[in-house]
Length: 161
Image (cartoon, rainbow, N blue to C red; front, side, top):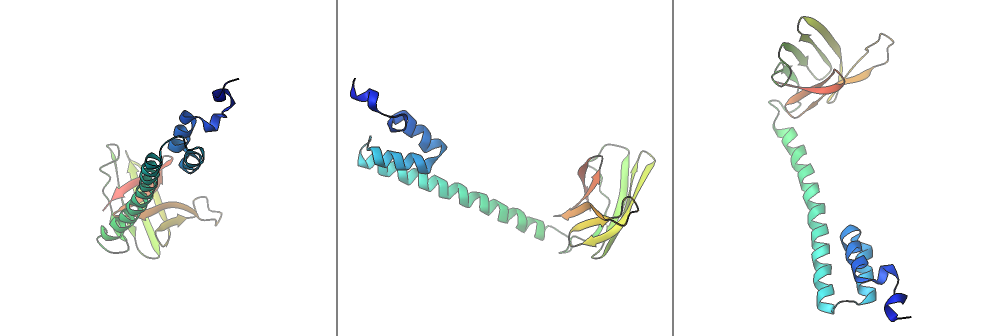
């Protein structure tokens, strides 16, 4: 039996490369443990993978912060309350208007002369109302950035100011 036949799957170069790409902590550990490559190659691969991991981690966090920051600064007033009546992203024939303040909201959607009315309480950025008369409130909308999102036809639909 040759020496290559005694090598386990996780000691083979191709397996280590795959593990470095798919699950790099384990792959890096095996790369250093099995010493299949020179020390300078192992150092370069380690620096690259750690740098890539840090870059992707910090990049996703900074985009989350940017999104949050844009939502806060793009409102005409800092809370996002006010009049919403821009249905331009909806199908033609749909219009309406919503007034939202810090404690209540009310509005309607006119879908080709079929009017659906909404009214309820505002809790922070969420809009809740008793939809079936049982006294139990459900979330029917929320404010995000400069848009109001209302639950309509199975999804939250955006309405601009």
